[in-house]
Image 1 (tube, rainbow, N blue to C red):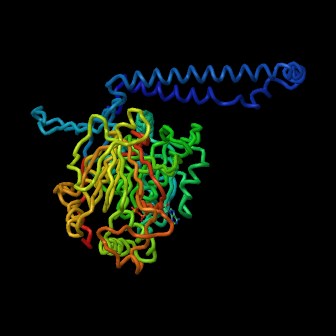
Image 2 (cartoon, rainbow, N blue to C red):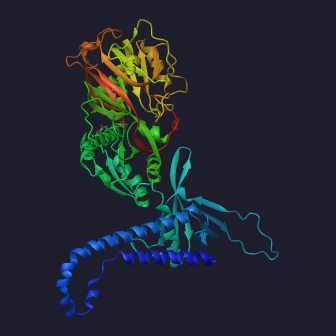
Image 3 (cartoon, rainbow, N blue to C red):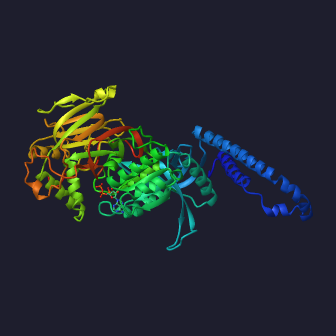
Length: 593
Ligand SMILES: Nc1ncnc2c1ncn2[C@@H]1O[C@H](COP(=O)(O)OP(=O)(O)OP(=O)(O)O)[C@@H](O)[C@H]1O
C-alpha cells in the first residue's frame, strides 16, 4: 500500500522522464567522440571545421527546438496534472504518531488514519479524513535526524511540509511532519510536492532586501536576521540584502540595480524607509519608461511588488496592508505572494516631481515632525512626546489657500463650510478638470492628505478611515482654526471608535488632487525659539526668513516652498499584503494627550 500500482507506474514514468530530460540537455562528452578513432577524426577535421559554424547553428536550433518541445511536454504534463483532482501519488506516512493513508492530488494532501480491523469487522466512526490545501503550503523539506554539530547526512525520517496558517490578522508558519524511513518513497513524494509548489507563480523566488539599521530602536537588522531570513530560506527564496548606510542610499541602489533579477523588493524599516523605497521603485519605473519628471505627467506603475517588514515606530504602511505590525505576518504575505494594488500620491511644485508617497500632513503634523527631527539626540519615543507637547503648547494655524478636485461621483463626508471662509471656483484653465476645482482660504491647524487608510496602533480605524488602499482617491482632512482644547479632543478621538471628524472645524473630502499654497510670504520657524513662543497663537502665522513650510510626507520631513500639487495615482504600486479594513492592534493612546 505504499503507492497504488497505477499511480506508481505514473510516478516512475515521470521520474525517469525527468532524468531523460536532464540527459538530453547534457553537452556531448569529448570522451565519446574519442572512441571513434583518431585517424578517421584527423581526416574529418578539416571538413568538420568548415561545417562547424553550420553545425553550431543547427545544434542551437535543435537544442532550442528540443527545449521548446520539452517545455511543451512539461506544460502538457503539468496541465494534465493540474486539471485533474485525481490522486497523483498515494502512500503511508506516520502523521502525528498515527499511521495514515495519504493521498496527494494537484491541489491538496489528504490523509486518513489507518485502523486495524476489529474482530467484528466494525469500522471506527471516529476515523476522520484530514487535509491540507497546497495553496497554504510554502515549503517541503527532507527531515533527517542529525547528531549535535552534524551538518550533512543523517538518518532520513521523512518529509516536512510548512503551511501558512492564519490566526486573526496574524499569519504563522506551521510544520506538518510526514514520517517514513524509506528513501525511495520520500524521494518520489518530495519530487511531486516540489513540482506542485513550483506551480504557484505569484510566489517570489528572488528578492532585493533593503534594511534600514537606524529605524526606530535600531532593531531592523536583527528582525530581518532572526525572524525573516530563516523563513525566506525555508521557502527557497534568494535574498540579496543591502543594509543602507545613509538616508537616500536605498534610492540610489534602486536607481542602479538590475531589477529584472528579482521578483520583488522588500523594505525592513519604518514608514520613512518604506516611502523611500516606494519612491525609488516608482522613480526607476519612470526612468525606464522615459518619462519626464520635470513636467506634469501620468506615471507608469512600479515594475516590482514591494514587501514591507515593519521595524519602525508607527508602521502605518505595514498596518494598512497587514492589519497588524508583525514581522512574521509580513514575511508570510511575501512568501505566499499575496498582492494588493495600492494608490500612490505624487507631490510636485512648479511642475517638477518632488516625490511619490502615501500620505502627507501640513500644519500640526508637519511642525511636530520638524521639531522632533531637530531633537534627534533624544530617544525616539521621548522625542516624539516632546515634539507633540511643545507643538501643542505653541499651537498655531497656517494661513493657506487650499484647492481640491473632488472625486467625481463619490464625494462624501463634506461638512458645512467653515464660517468666515470663502469658497470659489478656480480661476485658471477652462477644461472640465479646472472647472471642478474648489478653493478654500483660511487658517488651518492641520491638513492631511492620505491615499491609504493609515492604520496604526494610535488609530486602529486609520488616520483616514474614509479612503481605501486601491479606490483611486485620497482623503483630504482639513482641520480649521479652533481652541487648543477642541483640537486635543479631535486628536484623542483617533484612538477611540468615535468619529474623529464630527467637529464643526473639521472637514473631509474624497479627492483626486489637492493644491496647497501658503498665503503668507514668510515661512515657518522652530516653535521652541523665543520669538515665536510669545506670539498670538490663534492667528499669527509663524515667521521664517526662508519662506518654506514643513511637510510630513510618510514620516519624512520636507521643507517645501510655494504651491504644492498632490495628485492620486490609482494602484500605482503593488504591495505584498491584503486589503484590511481595520487594524487588529489594541488602541494605544498617545501618552502626552
Ligand atoms: N543608515 C542610515 N542612517 C540614517 N538614516 C537612514 C539610514 N538608512 C535609511 N535612513 C533613513 O532613515 C529615515 C527614517 O527611517 P524609518 O522610517 O525606517 O525609521 P523610523 O523613523 O524610526 O520609523 P517610523 O517612520 O515608522 O516612525 C528614512 O527616511 C531613511 O531614508
